[in-house]
Image 1: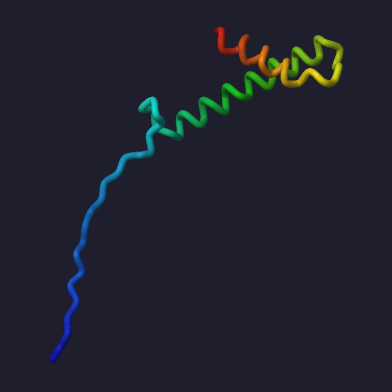
Image 2: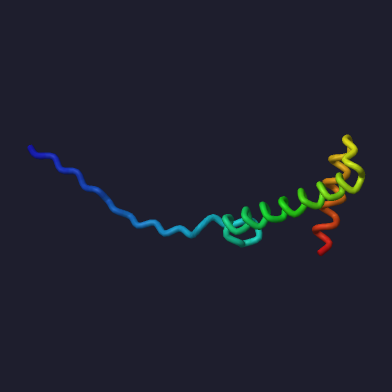
Length: 71
């Protein structure tokens, strides 16, 4: 008795992963990376404006977020 196997082929179409806002995840990651870069640059500016005084990194970051996100 000869055994044969049958392979069922299925085509699956899937779109790129989406963020919770419906944007393609890749674009969301890139835009968040860009936002974080701008916040980091502004936080550094605040640090320098303070005279490079250590110990205020979190405050600088929060203030930088507020400034960057207000635009």
